[in-house]
Amino acid sequence: MSNLTVRIITSAIGIPIIILAVLKGDFWIWKSIILVATILALYEFYKMVESRFPDFNDIKLIGIPVGGLVAATALFYPQYLMVTPTFAFIILALYFMLNFKDIETVAQRMGYTVIAILYISFLMPYVAILLHLNQGRYLVFLLLAITWGNDTFAYAFGRLFHGKVFKRKLYESLSPNKSIEGAIGGVVGGVGLAIAAKFLILGSIPLGDIILVALIMGPMGQSGDLIESMFKRYFKVKDSGNMIPGHGGILDRLDAVIINAPILFFYLQFTKGGLF
Image (cartoon, rainbow, N blue to C red; front, top):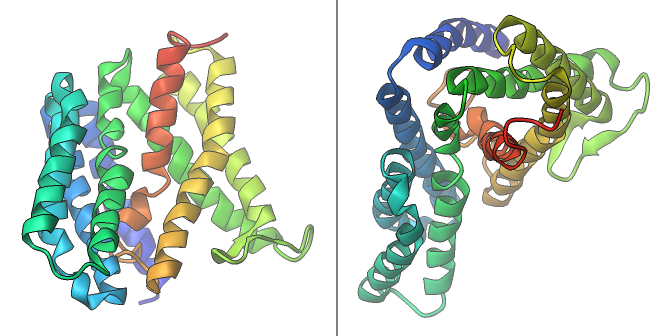
């Protein structure tokens, strides 16, 4: 069975389950799913670090509990979120002081630990925090539709038009297979799905805001994919993991979503629901 076939089967099974959880499940169920995804993504990141630096195999022992605590606070007790970074740093600093190995690597080990928490534990919860906004369930659906639609259309347009129009890579040093044609197709597809979502389930949000958000989230989602590619190339791995058949790891599937989720949240917060 080809990787593409496995990918299609996994999507056909997984996407309806996710949509059902978003639109019908209790808030705590979706928040719990995001918390579990955060912990798994942290594990994947630290395993990537370990793949290049085997001696850093201890950072996951402190990084996952602290990162999980940060995410759980953001999801279930956001009123205490301001104090979380303070205690998270103190806990990490004490751990590396008491678990000291050598002066040459202690800052590097701590740095990788903190980067993963900033990257994953602070961003991933926004996928569930959107639920607290007006029409929150549908906003999560919009987030996933734009981001994953962008990814799908980018792949399709890249395969269809690459070498026939611009003949240029998007960012070859980070992701050799991505093309300008694909990037443009992804944005177009994301906007199209956003407009469809507007008329299907997001009637109260102005069309202008839907289009503007999709235009912003298209390039930013692609940037999220490239950010993860940057880490993977540095750590010399192909995928962040293999938890999702045909798709790689949790982080591979959510790298663009966790960048777009806070963008959508703060856009609606700062514009008080929309500019138009």
